[in-house]
Length: 334
Image (cartoon, rainbow, N blue to C red):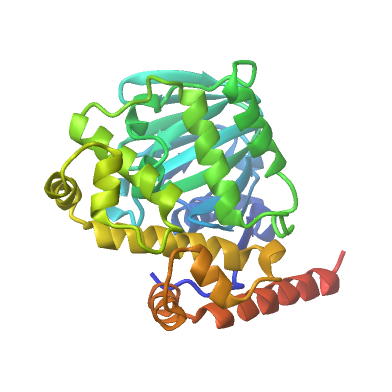
């Protein structure tokens, strides 16, 4: 997928833009078209009001949703129409929700977080007005942090318990101006949220398969050592006391290769550095070196193939995008 630097698509939908009689129908169309294909009803149709603010957030999508009393269903029919499969992490800011999925039920109160599987049917009942922060994660990306996310679906993470406190605090801080520029790139903050979710899940959030466990450890080592220009399969295999042949077999079982994964990790590392204004003082060549690339031309070509722009263009376009956003904010009516 090509990603154009500097662009952070922002979406605002509100039932205040339509007559009350059409508010619920407008809300269903807005949610289905922008966030998730759902069936939504309300016991108070005559007074129903809702609002969605949404933007890209690194590999994720960040949404802040406010709504009056509503009942939400994700059915098999809606899933068949879906353009998206993954998980989303919901942080309840105000109100309560009863959530059912996988035959489990969770009562989610203000301050709680809950993980939801978009690929399977679920049901949410909100008996009062609610406000929540929702981070939608691609499945493969999330599994790099939480090997078996299905195990934690429909289980409320209370803000009063251990690492869940930190997770809730970070998500609460995302409930601010949706166009505000954070001190770190969105992709880095998304990774921090995923890491806190893994910590909140606890040490038992393991992979059932021994083969998957080894592959997960291999990927962690790749991320830790991707800056080494001479990194080889032999070196990684030796770290884990397995043969090079077995290492290649493990990656092949996941329909990938050692070389492809190393390149992906290096490019993601470069993307983070080029997206972070704190590193604007180092040259593109230095970024390439820090991420394990020997030849700057090779780095530039692979970066352009992945992200749609060369690294120098990406950095310039990011700043053009931010300046454009600031200009829009300044000129917006109060």
